Image (cartoon, rainbow, N blue to C red; front, side):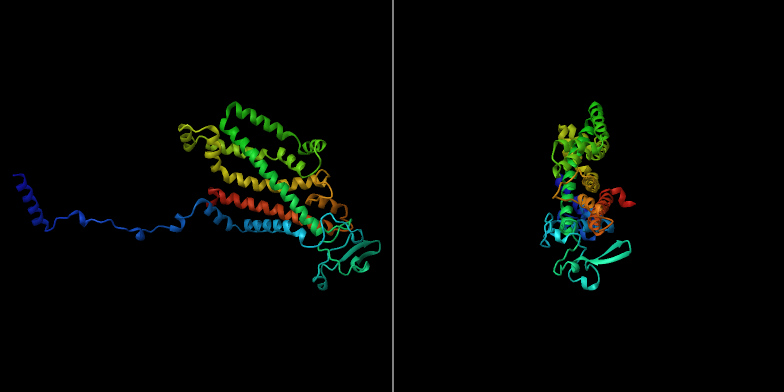
Length: 358
């Protein structure tokens, strides 16, 4: 009786609709090609978008090109001629810039204007002393040392000091600020009071005390910068930690049993890498200027080593008589500091999603 009713219902369905659908009549339709999706935007990762925004900022591109150029010259520049940064040829001291191939054009031919009691006199020590085959591209100093070689060697020393000090400051300040902001309470209060005390000590006092214990040199300047320049990094890291430590992903990690240092360095740190990188790029020109200042006042690199600051100090003593001796290190240092600031400004806009809409 049951089979008879089922057959009757099927017959009525066929009669009414003329066709009864079966499972093989239904197939999945692949319409991915018909959906209007911006595949270019969808495939871009965060860092790819950062690079695109950075490249679109012309000043930042100029900065990175200048940094690469100065770094390249700092590596290879001292080896482009036969002079060394410490070699002295007293017979060839205080020679004006002279470049082979350009001297016939009336520029960089060794002429130097001297201010005398009777007026301005143009002299050429190359011709007067018979140095026909001698060329100093940036001139020579009062001890007969090649300023070209010393400028690029000094740029190398200044870059090494600044980058190493900035990296060390990043590690110390970032760790200090993250730990202080994460634990909060009494730990944060004690750590911040210590930070204020450390920040209140003048940098020059710390350097002077270090020079009484350590020998003047690159290591002493790096230690001095390490002891004084980490404060700004720690404050930025602490502010970011206070903003992120109550977020859902931190609460989820804590609920799953993650330790405090795992949360600090594995969960929070990757989310604040943008401000950290920006602060590092801003701290490098500050370190370059600090090293130059210390070398200028005689607390930096000892002779025969040189840095941009010591070269400016040496050129300052002869500025009224031989101004070309101070021009090249000043230009290199100014371009270096400007370039790092331009790159840091470009990174700040590229890494901050809020700047995208401005």
